[in-house]
Image (tube, rainbow, N blue to C red; front, side, top):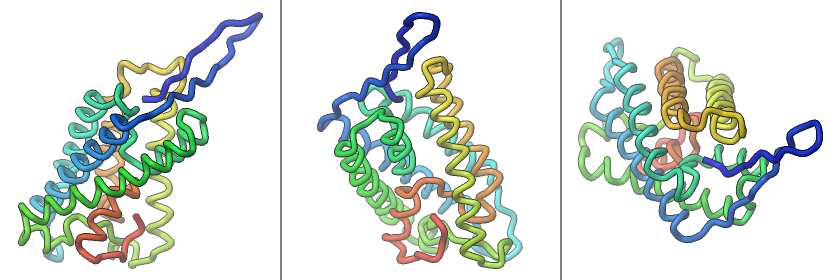
Length: 222
């Protein structure tokens, strides 16, 4: 997902950052990937979340959707753009000098645009079902007593673990990059299964931003 190389020198190995130049193809890949991610996630939420108090919601299905869609998107777009699809990931990889500040900023804009486009497609295809759940907008649940601070802590914790795994398997030169897609997808799916009942499990500003813009629901910690 991010290009690094290991150069041996003297008694120790030195990590040499290779900040790749990105171009239009990378920006398009980030838009399309984020669009697809947000569409499939919000469509799954619209179809499987029942907005009835006390109703059973199978978050394992929604979690598995996250696993598979992110895995497939990483496999498709990793070479083209690094497969960020998430402003939080882009910020982290900018910090680790895997992408330039300018390219990172363009990535974030395209990711946010892709998130809005994905939510709009869900609205177009699943208008009634989507409207009932605000097209998958992330909101702080009653389990946290609607506490915005608690929701922010949950979202920050989930985002931290997701980025930690990405850095560990995709950025670390000793990481098992051949397993990156599955590992990252499975991590996101696990986080969704555990934390979705609390906040909707955004862990991705683009995933939260798109449905919020489309639904007008900004009450969550996304």
